[in-house]
Length: 220
Image (cartoon, rainbow, N blue to C red; front, top):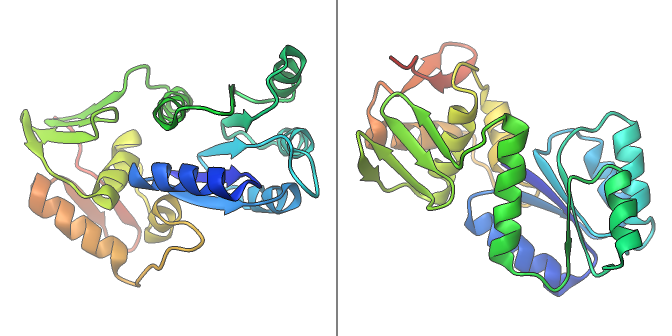
């Protein structure tokens, strides 16, 4: 999934980015409120992590403007502001969750997973499609109950496809989901990941729709 972090503290920002990238997410990092608002204008994010005490523009202002412009991605406020009034202001401005610093990175990752599931209408952390099972918590994929080892990008690609198994994703859409600003993407990167997934899951599991993109095979 493609996430945006808006955070001005370098140490906190680096730790969050490293943790979420380690789980296979693509993470863009804006270090002030104005940069965060500009990034949100691209409308490519599945979830936003937003600090409140930002330079240039406050997090509450960024959030309020994002919601007023129709932005619908889930937003988790990640802040040192722990007063009840701050929590109320953040949630009333349109945040979906609120976590205060210092926090455990595993808890933050769990909150991210929960909001992404809620947005997709998936109450459980497991996804099923035919004989494929994907578990977000254990980060495991199995076919016919046999665990199939996937690298992070392969897991992320399958997560995107299984979330909307009838949708045909273009190469550009998949690149947007899997890669952030600073990631180098070769022209054939998506094709390589698809090829590797087919080798591991079975060649028939991912269908190429000529001239458009990729989707999962129809489940039987």
